[in-house]
Length: 583
Image 1 (cartoon, helix red, strand yellow):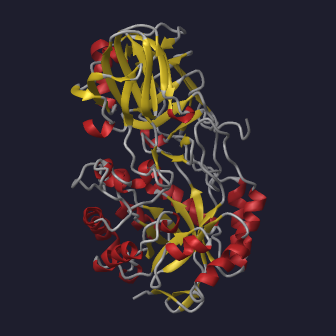
Image 2 (tube, rainbow, N blue to C red; image 1 turned 90 degrees about the vertical axis):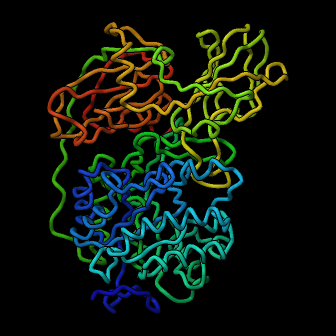
Image 3 (spheres, one colour; image 1 turned 30 degrees about the horizontal axis):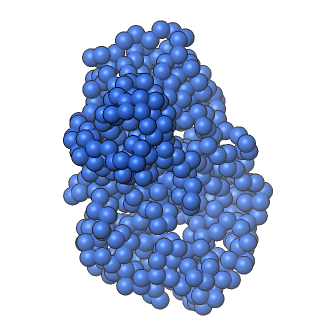
């Protein structure tokens, strides 16, 4: 029976020192038909281990309905890791950060604002225990001593940056052991004295997260943990992007030198990310450290393996570094070819106001979206304005498009801290609120979306509201277009908000890169699959279309365009365009 343990200075695989050379790859950010190819590419770089988070809100979007099939088939992913001859590290949270919506916490969990997340609140722990039990049913038989891939499981995630409740960490540890997880347990924190003190327990292996100055950071970790293997459990070799900011890249040469420094010290490493993937649908998170910054759809991360699976210069430099410290396979990835170029017209459109997708509920005062289902995506608000005046909102989460008698009168944007808008007259006020990423780091995790009141006109609170969730999905959009859609005039711009559809020809023999330049802001579905958001704010200029989504005839595209399309045309280009690296 194979074994994996923590020794005095090293990890021990079957009793012998073992240096973990891992890379982060999130199964939920990759089309499942591409898992095997991406894992093979990671192995060919020289990795012996793959690490993944587990997103609670994806697996259990509704309380008590845990799903682990299709793109959430963690068991299959871990089995594929093992089939490639690699080991696995599992990080189930319950909080994961990961630039993922709400840091992985489900909407139904956080609807009760009195519930204290990431704490020993009994109600929170009861839900966590139920969730972890489902995850560990998958992980338990796949531990190394059962001839599976899993060698490490992480408790919580970067907890030292959030709290210092040792009893909470111990409760999670006890749950994990009670569910039959016998492999070593770890924590991860940035290597500062406070975070390392607050984020772990004596019986857990502390690991560090950083992107440079390895000797200094690992020395800090060693001061806090005199024995056991040293590990950088998140070696940041790239970074994520936010809407309206430049695309982040890092030097392949410098990153390779930092990786060399870690491995030369005999430390283990997990490259974050070795392959980032995509924030499909409404899954991207956000940061708010005084200014709200929602994450873009691409999670390319400037990783060694690009979003579309292409090995970058960083890949080959990392492979050379790893080869100096561990065996590297002789086989290498097949050369990538440019993606297909195509163009087709968007052909049908219906204004969102005419699509009849709302489920209206009456409220006296304007409620947050948690009061009517906490939908991802969008929500609608409507009331009657008695006269012209200045509208004020307590807070907008996250972008509110205002219409008076059907005519646009302005936008309140959370990023700009907008809270006031002058209305030119009375009439029927309709508001479309975009729910962008749920904050994934810091004290604002788990906040509600929509309008956070009160909503006032000239200082007096407005009453008599109708509200509706608008969690747009492919089937109702398609039905609305079939029932009420009109032909799009070729080359004529479209005003938003509008639903649009079209068809194009492209089989599943290769990926596509959908060029969204000339479009405003919205979301896209390909053959019913939620591709993700786009925005003219950039930096991202193309959306990645995985080949398995495509079919040999009649591919369908559905688009929600919020602002307006200057050019209602489908275009695919040969390479991804993730935007400028400086503005």
